[in-house]
Image 1 (tube, rainbow, N blue to C red):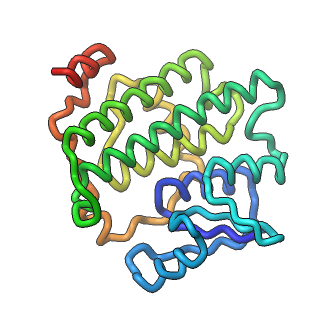
Image 2 (cartoon, one colour):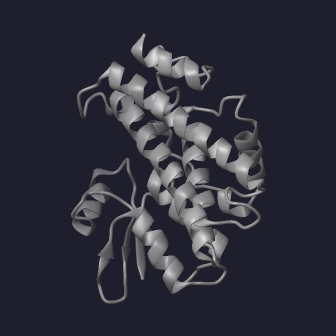
Length: 238
């Protein structure tokens, strides 16, 4: 199998963490260079969506969704189990996966509509960026609640799962690339983040300096990051 990726980017990063946690080493990983137009041209030849990651199986089939890739690999490499053994455990994992994935999607909207990185590529919209920032925070609050309910140390309890890989990739990318850090009041999530980022899987290839110079310091367009659940809802309509 071949995995095509920008190995530092948001969605490929979750695959990289998962592969490290699983100990999967027999996949050929092919990294593109986001700062090289020729390399990006090769990416478009590989992915009809123009996105990464892309997993190409032995028979040539291409899987272009990171969630689909993770679940496909979990089926192919069932040990160590990272989705849960029982129906209830699998449901807890998929619920946490959904929350972490939604956080990543909202972070992406926030960046695309509010970061100077994308200013020359698409229309910027401060109100949309502000709304996405609030929606991103909402998902972080939900992850904090999940940790409280499941009593850790991992998102769904005592075992590391795919959900942890997705959440770590998202929070790490937000902090490293955009300079968006976790609010202090999300104590459980902050403790989980500090715990998980000590794992070898959390060591990530660096973001290109040219991209980082423009991306770091994502504007929040006036959204108060310290607001509680009631406060940010009021802020959206205020």
